[in-house]
Length: 340
Image 1 (tube, rainbow, N blue to C red):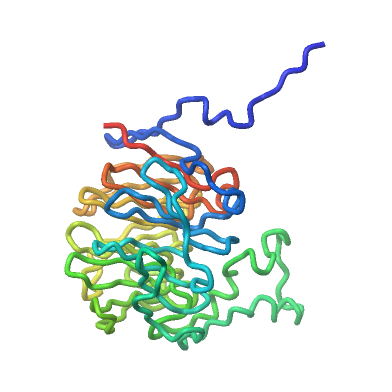
Image 2 (image 1 turned 60 degrees about the vertical axis):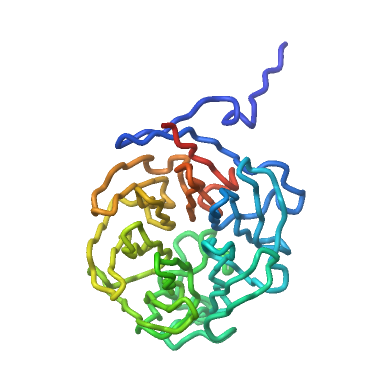
């Protein structure tokens, strides 16, 4: 008898491409290389690229929650120990600093290359008054008022927000209550999606002064259910992922709605822009590409495809990086290498 064995790394030894709307990508299942043992199985929630095409992973379950990779995917270093509690999404600034949203601390911080805090925005440890009750699910379970249809999907601590908890957000509030993402426009103004415990987008000056807040709870353009990610395109238009409403909103810097897309986005979780496009990834396996003229350029992937991801980044070459976290446990950092 001959014993036959299949390769558990089969995706590394085959060619997979995704193509749509004139865009074509080579699928690289695991971009990160030479990770130390304590990082190899960490959950990567998000990430970003700097102007040098280094890739930063925002991880959960590691002492240092930010891992730096060089442009080839090799491990370089890490930072954030004792400062960042749970980082969600972030960006690299043109000044070689990093800005990140820290969910449970209700703050957005700016760091230097060594991980030193330069600026902190928000009231550390104190969420704004949106009505959000992060323990609503546990409270109602103990009272016998809530019964999960699939218990394994309702493990406290694994599920960020249940539908019942989101329902406790009854008003738009000031910064912040569990912020999710941060972006910069060409003038240096800062935009924060304040979405796990709030339903708002905030605009700040570069020195951290609040200029404007907009949003509120609702299901129409400009109103939110979960403000999960934000980016600014080449025309300084603000794009916002409303994840659990399956929608993307586009605003000017005063909060006026310019465009809206709802449906067939695969629960849009991460969004990023470069000089040409806006890339939106959905946890369901969808990648949707827009241009600054509010046209859908490409729809790539399909339900439950390998493109399931929580966050997304883009480098100067147009290569995309997908950060799956629990959307797919098989990978930590997927690269979609742009094929010209």
